[in-house]
Structure formats: structure tokens, C-alpha cells
Length: 334
Image 1 (tube, rainbow, N blue to C red):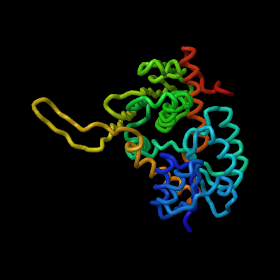
Image 2 (image 1 turned 90 degrees about the vertical axis):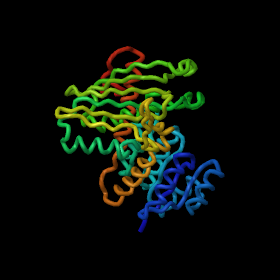
Image 3 (image 1 turned 90 degrees about the horizontal axis):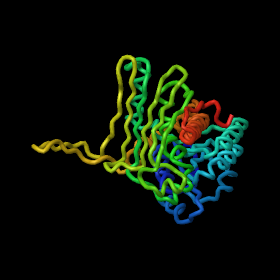
Image 4 (image 1 turned 180 degrees about the vertical axis):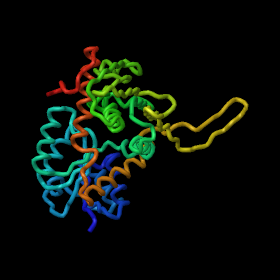
């Protein structure tokens, strides 16, 4: 019997996840809910499911799992509601922008025994996953340094920046999760610097658009993160891990892998234009992993605890940038 899913939120990422569910024979998209009727109806037509209210989905015993793709400020409440309703939950990052609120939400998840996975899709990118496998196989020895470059092709609208929670919580949070994924140890201290270099309006809105972060574990392993809201050459996503026996790296994939060589030099096509094309395979793979975990009973990964840990690192980075000092992670909202 296929797992019966309901989709909460029929926007851009919701449509992507609806396709992944529809493509997996182990799953069936039964319902979609969205306050924008046209968006919900478009998904329903494309996937052959019903348009339902959130109340109806929560009350339906035939719905096994929900995929939450709604605005960030609704995530924690919906997780709690569907945990109490006995549904398995996949939720896009973050659980909430407040560390305290996330902890309260995860308390409900624990009390109800609900199964929760957080959508840190980059863990499922085939290139980054291959880096992790090389580490696990001992190919580069003990991890010593991780370098993560993550740059968007351009600024989002200022209206979005105003409600995003800031660069560390909105953008760098993916890199914090990836750093934890690759370091293999918990982060002890965070040192961060940032500025509004792309557009002064970002600074006036109380945010930054360019940042550098150093994470350090108790044993001295380090991760260096470079972020920018602007990369004139495309969506820049690279990783390198240096170890005691060597290094492993994942370079930018390109839509076309051609190269033209002339007397003037070598020319390759541009990078992907943004995350929807760069991480297509990752989005499909994370939904497949969620279905795998439901079928096998294996622990969900990334878990709610992973979501909390990444947000705590974001908070530590914000404090570090404001105060110009290294910040201990165990002192954040303790």
C-alpha cells in the first residue's frame, strides 16, 4: 500500500515536492492545501489529487504523512499540529526563526513520538553526497578542514529580505548544516563577519549580503564558509574537504558540460542560474529518503535536532558578527 501524502503549500517548492511524490511508486499524493485556491487547484490537476483544507487533512486517518512547504512563520505550528494528529512530517527548513520556539516545537515532536525530517536538501545533492561517502570510506583520512562556498546569483527582493530572518538564518543555515554533515563533530565556537556590499539598502533593512564564517570543533577541526548574495557568473556552490591523507572536492556542475578551446583560451557554459535547477536531483532524493525512512523505520535524517543545531549556529554567527568575537555554541539561548 503506497504511503498517502498531503502537501501543505502549493508554491514553487511545493510543486517540486509534489512531482517527487508523484514519481515514486511507493507514495501517493492524496491532497493539497493552500490559501491561494488557484495554486492548490493547479497542483491538484497536475497530480490527480484533491484540494482539502488543513483541518480536513489533519482529521483524515487515511493521510499518513504531510509535506510542509508553507511560509516559515507557520512551520512550527503545523509541525506540532500534525505531530499530535499522528502524521509523519517532512518540513522545509527552518522549523522557525527562533531557537526557543524550535525547542518548544521539538518537545511536542518528542512527546508525541512523531517522525520529523527537515528539508536540508543539499545533503542529498549527488556531488556533495559523494564527498561525504569519500570521507566515510577513509579516502582522505581524518577530516581537518572544510571549505564551503555558497553564493547566490543576485539579491532577492528587499521585501523578502525584510522577513527572511537575515542572511545567517535564511541562506547560511544550509551551509551550517553541510558543515556539520562533513565535519563529523559538533561545532564548539563560531566566528563571523558580514557586511552589505551588494546593495546599501540591505544594510538599511538591518541585514547583510556578504559573510565569512569560521566554525571550530572541540578537537580543532574547522569549517570556513563564504557567502554572497551576488555572483555575476551564476549560482556558485562548491565544497572542499581537506584531510590527513588527502582532499576531496565537489565543483560547480553545469547545465552543459561542453568546452570550447581557441587561441583566445578555454570557454565553458555558465553555471546554473539558481537553486531550482542546481538542486533538482537533491530535491527528488530527499523525498525518496523520507519515504525510505517511513518504510524501513530508520531514523529521520536530517532530523529536527539537525534543524535546531543549524539554527543555533546561525544565532551564534549573528552574535559573533555584532560583538566581534568568537561565540561558544553552548551559550546560545541555553
